[in-house]
Image (cartoon, rainbow, N blue to C red):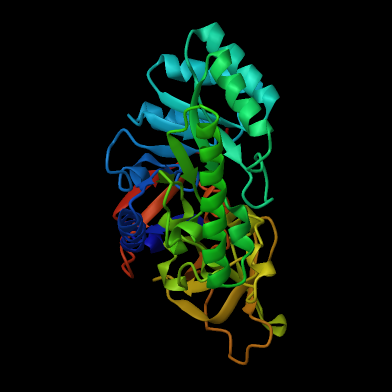
Length: 377
């Protein structure tokens, strides 16, 4: 089958670009002497993840227990659930562990630590946990130096859990305005997690794991001394936000949405396609960057961008393509039925709108495989 035979919209994965992105990150972290615990929240597909892992058993990072169930069902055992574990989910965690999943949770407060300890006692299982560290004020975590770090650590140990270590996520790296700023953020991320690990050790508590993770900082970190693993995920596919951060080039973006031209509004300079925000997602991450790509960059069916053509606006099932504001070129001639591919702002959000990848290689339009993906929680 060829792309031209598919019903649109659908998700396309360029396997050659994907493989190149995976190899680049693996080589980079090997050189820095740290393990990669791939974050699979973007991929959500065993066919993708098997091509990322060196061992079929992991390690991986997940964002939902549905992901944990799915990947464990495909033989992956070493799993970090990297969202603060709500008490109501701990029974599910214990059930997965009772079936053989080496599942580790994350938490950042005494209430969650007490709930985890209660579950560990109830299931007679030393549930392992990482304490989340706030390295940048972006989201969750305990600030290094806060006495709560040691309180949470002691609560876990005395309550019957396994204190496995600390983790952090430099989410503020997505707001950096230069490569130099990302490099500085990588240092800040490393220093925060290493300081927290050292504080636990100085207090006589175990801390074998010091985990960091974001694709921007993983790409530009120069020294990860004291870090044991890196979690990154969007690097497999990349997207326009990553390109705007200079973490990748537009040519590195491995996923796109295939769409068909369904109309023209020539007096307005619009081309209408059958992929709206339900296919692309509502993510407008590039609006905060120097170059705003609307809802995505329009390419021909082979993945080559048209000059200055973006999805300027979107309704639920309609995408409006127009020239970027200030562009001096002309709209491409795209008759009704023409197919094109839209590069996404945010690979995770766009991928979540679809149930499968249609896999191609490079500029070829022949589909080499269809890889199912999961969604939900």
